[in-house]
View 1 (tube, rainbow, N blue to C red):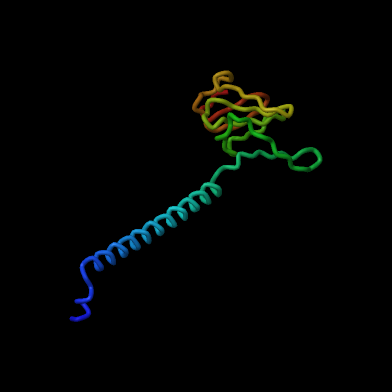
View 2 (tube, rainbow, N blue to C red; view 1 turned 135 degrees about the vertical axis):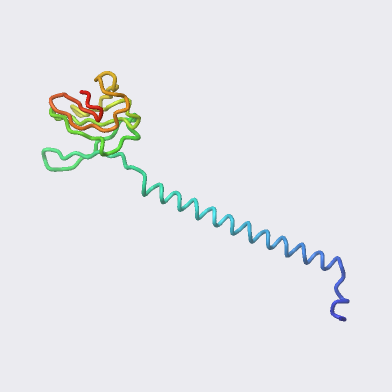
Length: 139
């Protein structure tokens, strides 16, 4: 009992405040570390799952070269590429409203209404003798 007599109320209050501050600081540190780990996880997931948006071609010498995609095709997917009968390469814009044709070492953007395709066409089936076919069956 003598031990408790030596502690006065202001001392106990100060010790309680120090304990609460230390506990709050620990929770804030843990929350910050968890937030950083979550951001790292999101960044790693995004980098792994992000499309590369790169197209490669094999030239006459048997070497691969990368074709830079036009800015309008940032959302283009690799499965929208179709080889044309005239040596061209066709690709749907990510919006489905435009197509890009690679011919003579340059990209050309063609609006879907210019070639009579449904604007919502999302997949090219074939390109042959300048006939472009989409999933809606128009050419």
